[in-house]
Image 1 (cartoon, helix red, strand yellow):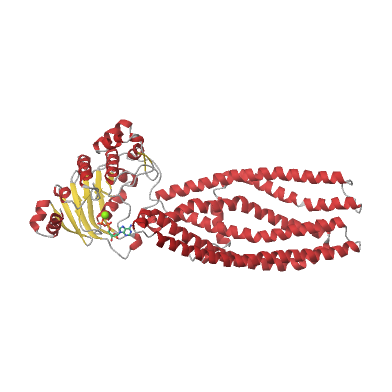
Image 2: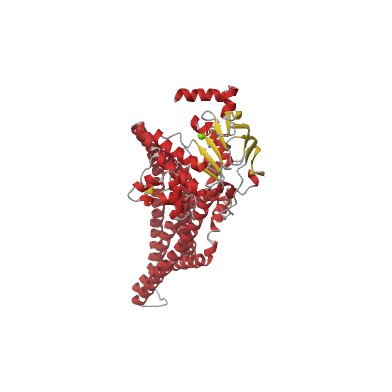
Amino acid sequence: MSKESKHRLNKEGLRKLAGIFTYILPYKWTFGVGLAFLLFSSSMFMVFPYISGKLIDIASGSDQWLVNNLWQAALILFGVLLFQSIVSFFRVVLFARVTENAMANIRTDLYQKMVLLPMSFFDRNRVGDLVSRISNDVSLVQSAMSTTLAELIRQIIVLVVGVIVIFFVTPSLSLFMIGTFPVIVIIAFVFGKFIRRLSKKTQEQLSESSIVVEETIQSIQSVKSFTSEAFEVGRYTKSMKGVVKTALMVANFRAAFISFIIFAIFGAIVGIMWYGASLVQSGAMTVGDLISFILYTTFIGASIAGLGDLFGQLQKAVGASERILEVLAEQGEMELTETDNIRLSGDIVFDNVHFEYPTRTEMPVLKGINLHIENGQKAALVGHSGAGKSTIAQLLMRFYEVSSGQIRIGDTGLTDLDLALLRKNVGIVPQEVILFGGTIEENIRYGKPEATKEEIITAAKKANAYRFIESFPEGFETMVGERGVKLSGGQRQRIAIARAVLKNPSILILDEATSALDAESEKLVQEALHDLMEGRTTLIIAHRLSTIKSCDTIYVLEEGQVKESGSHTDLIERQGAYKNFVSLQMAED
Ligand SMILES: Nc1ncnc2c1ncn2[C@@H]1O[C@H](COP(=O)(O)OP(=O)(O)O)[C@@H](O)[C@H]1O
Ligand SMILES: [Mg+2]
């Protein structure tokens, strides 16, 4: 779908907004009552100019009305106002109750959908964009459903009721006004539409500049280490200049639009006052009627001026709801249900697996991989950076689907396994461990939510993490993550190992788990890993010879295929790619 057709307020757009309205359905009665209050208070409001006129006529003695003294008329006016304010109070409260609940439901659904979406979705979408859908877009829809919708209904009622009333009270003056009326409406409409299109450009530019902020803050360390602060500030300043330029151009048009509205509306009022005054002079109309007429005309004018903006906001809401529905329509990779804790066998087969990433389909990463790792064995993947080692690990966890070939656990194809069950049986210790904001205990518990404190302590001990955790003043309660204590790479690694110990998977993947560590922490991590590997199938991706040597089978990856496989001694004897790799390693150490 092209960008242009995206935010248009046509049938299609309204249907999208209607899709969001399904979230209102559970609160339809509250919403209905709020709507009735709104209709009622808006209609009631239209009585106001009428009674005001009557008040003047009673004063000048030129008319007889329901009441014929001033204080009674004033009392009625006050009564109308009081009623207005009470009804408006409930209208706002009721609408808030509906929209706040409905929006929380949309947000929860969106969030739930997002976390259940496959990895390929996250490759395609920026983090900031997804966050903005949950926060900004939902807020936009919310304001459309509460204030914009209410305003729209109110303005339309003002417009329709206003025109009807003045036609009844003073037909000839109304005809005069109607002569100028449609012209203003049409010009305002076309003009408003033009401005809205321009405003969208400002919005887009603004969100582009937020991307700069997001990117630099996310990698603030790199920015600082390259001392590219000035460069980034320059980049941001430049995009800000662009925003200002467009915004000012839009502002010029908007200013012209507003002054046009003022001139046209007030010009019309002046003309009407002149014509009305001459009607009063000739005795064809009372002063009171003229006053209510002018009040009505002002109301009508204001509502026309407001409608343009309201349509703009509705359009934005259509765009926002489209972005929300887009995510909701995506296919999640699994349901949010509990699965049984069945222990899978650790027998892994890769049978002629071909794969390319969905975002880079033109570049095949795996071109016919064959592996067989028997239950309880340790296998190593060796190959240069970018050879596809991590990709194999990701496929094993079914983060992506293979393009052809098959992966089997035991005798079952990966696609026939329950996804949650599969992932519960696979544990991974990656190179770069990212901890969640929270305590160390919570982070370890992530491996097994129902674990007791005893189990956590045991796991920490097995992971060689207990000593350093206890050395912190707050021990297991130490806050880590973005707003907590920064742990070293080796410490984070050992937390990840403790997690894996708790998870107790039948298949363990170590993806360069020790390669970013210094010798001291490597030793501690290595020891912990040694215990962790006991009794499970382990896939080790590593470049340290010491780690690989003792593996049952070593697979050497090259150009998306397994070039060689066998035990360390077998492969050394073959004098092939592995031998080269080993010599390189020896030279390095
Ligand atoms: N999420 C991704 N989307 C697109 N391409 C990717 C993605 N992850 C890795 N690649 C590419 O796939 C190839 C293999 O990557 P990877 O499996 O990470 O290599 P290794 O772990 O052996 O260093 C690389 O060329 C890399 O650029
Ligand atoms: Mg890798």
